[in-house]
Length: 282
Length: 278
Image (cartoon, rainbow over all chains, first blue to last red; front, side, top):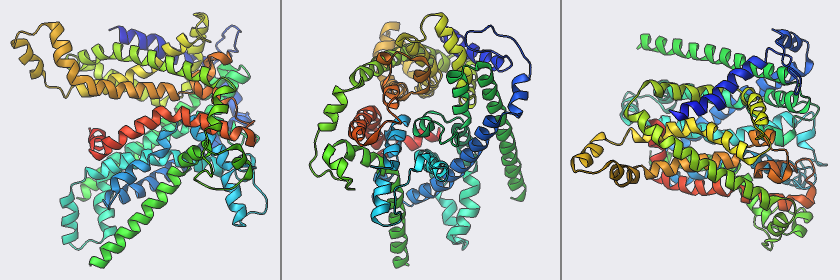
């Protein structure tokens, strides 16, 4: 099939080549020479690398866990089917109505030091006596970026989890109620175990997507202030396309894949163990 | 008991309203800012409804910079790559769902791989390939990348849908003496139209919104797509740029907003929930 050929030439081969470049000292324009694990040895001493992976992990863990908890809360509220439920379930998708770059542009305006609505509101409520430059302050930049990340990712988690909740048969809850289980017990012993596969899938995908995030954060802070919000993808981009260290950038990409794979392996393994454990208890 | 449910419903509404006001506020604020006059933006007053709604910001946005040019670039790349993606994916998806099963796993596997591997690994060699083909700073090159990038997912979407179309439909048409041509255009195509539309919308929007490839490949400002053009202004906004930038942002959001409107209908029918489960 021609499709296969196209995908192989323009994505499978480039990907393999990209992985290989991570083991070379390639700089744009220069010849490519294999240098084994030298890039990785250099990383161990590279403060920029460590800082970007540290903030990358903080960002990924906080955004993923936050979006899952807040998304689950939202999904449970939607599942109660009060009046206007279907209207609510559309309105919560609002972040999706904006392309990732636009999300960042609008939040830059909301956070803006002179004209931003947050500074204006906080000042008129006298929470602040002078405007704060949220996105370029060492104190607030990371939380400010995380809030935007959560805002953009909650809807995704809520939609996935809501679909998962809808697949849980109602008679189970009725049976639980008859047995005298209160709302919390029903959540703990019916909802959570049955939601586990969807939950595990949503957590894994969100974790990967958040760790690989680029565009939104790039436009929001360009990695600033002082590299504080430079996520791994931003670091790799700068290495390759600002400084021309293509081999080193690819090496950062390789480390990212390894890190994600390790995280996924351990996460999915505990998931598997827990689900077999709960099978045995039953 | 009754009182208890009323209380619970009230709490649910309050909770949902809290979520909606957080999640929808930036969208509302973007639209509101885009219709405010420059004078109102300078006054720093925090109001959602503009005092005197005006199209001033849209006029400025369209006349200065290269907004129209970049909209045109995004639009042509989006439409052409979407049409080609669908044209390539449709026959393959059909073959995939009617004949082989090994390929199915390969496609799904590839989709997963592209999610896990950071784009940086693929973008560097792709950049080198396109540069050697003299396609690195060209919309044609960008279009080719988008086609290949969207192909696996579109293939998967179409395949999932075609699989639900019973083979008996085709067999019945064959027995009735329909030619191959008639079979494809009179029987299959009408049934597949919703799926084709859905995957075309998906492909177009993901192209329209795409930033990373465009940022790396497109260096000539006149060839920039809309996201690249808008991102160029970050860091030099100031109050003077706030209005035009908000107006451009509304324009850039139009395709997703349309999808949003369609989704509303899907949600009402519970269609989205159904398709998510599958």
